[in-house]
Amino acid sequence: MKKTSTNTKINIQPLADRVLVKRVDSDDKKSPAGIIIPDTAQKEKSKIGLVVAVGPGRFGDEGDLIPMTVKVGSKVVFNSGWDNEVDTGEKDEEFFLVKESDILAIIK
Figure 1 (cartoon, helix red, strand yellow):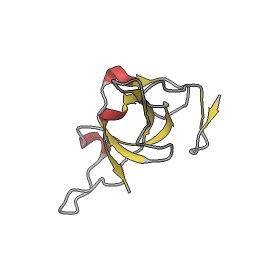
Figure 2 (cartoon, one colour; figure 1 turned 90 degrees about the vertical axis):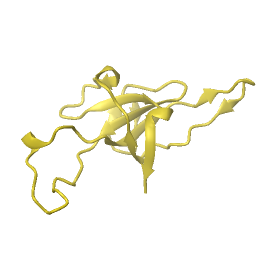
Figure 3 (cartoon, rainbow, N blue to C red; figure 1 turned 180 degrees about the horizontal axis):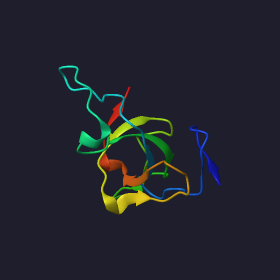
Figure 4 (cartoon, rainbow, N blue to C red; figure 1 turned 135 degrees about the vertical axis):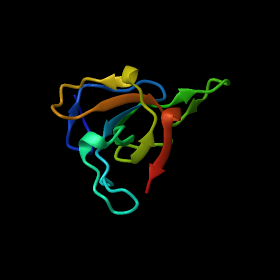
């Protein structure tokens, strides 16, 4: 069982260039004009998450290991779909297994 920096015990170790991301709620639930938007009116869940586990990297054409750019604990913006959601057994938390290339940005 892998213990991560988020104090969550995860039974998943990503392979190659895969990253396990825990979706976090966006604090921004207001419109630009300052109107509070209820959860029922929000069309799509946040694509912001916290990296909880990473694979070792991918192998390049020459056979050399290309290390991962993202690290455990990084807050990221990512692309996800229904097919890469992972059930880790954690209650009320959503996890996604994505390729590193599906991570669009690291939030600093």
